[in-house]
Image 1 (spheres, rainbow, N blue to C red):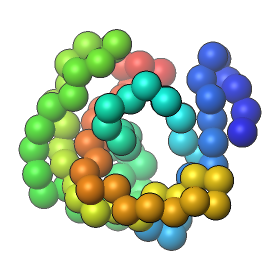
Image 2 (spheres, rainbow, N blue to C red):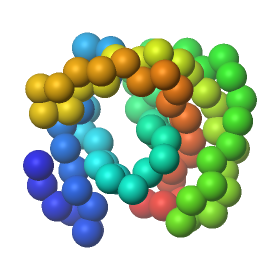
Image 3 (cartoon, helix red, strand yellow):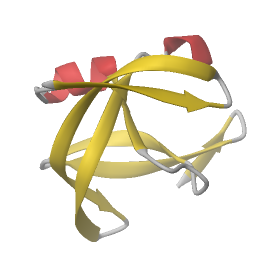
Image 4 (cartoon, rainbow, N blue to C red):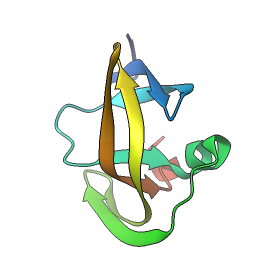
Length: 88
C-alpha cells in the first residue's frame, strides 16, 4: 500500500493478472479504466454510466470478475469500465 497524490494505491489481482489500483472505500461500484480493461483483455459487452466526484461518464459494463486485494479474493458481480483520464 502506498499513497500517491492523496490516493491510496494497492496491488490488485484481476482475473489472475496483477496491477496497481486506487482503493476508494466510499465507492458504490468497482471501476476499471478503459486502458486497464484492454490490457487485461476484459470484454465489456454491456453499456451504462457512472456519476461521481469527477462528474458523469459513459461506461461499459463487464460482469463476474475475480478481484483479489490483500490476499482476499472475491467475485465482483458488475464492474464499470470508464475513461478515467480526465481525473488523472
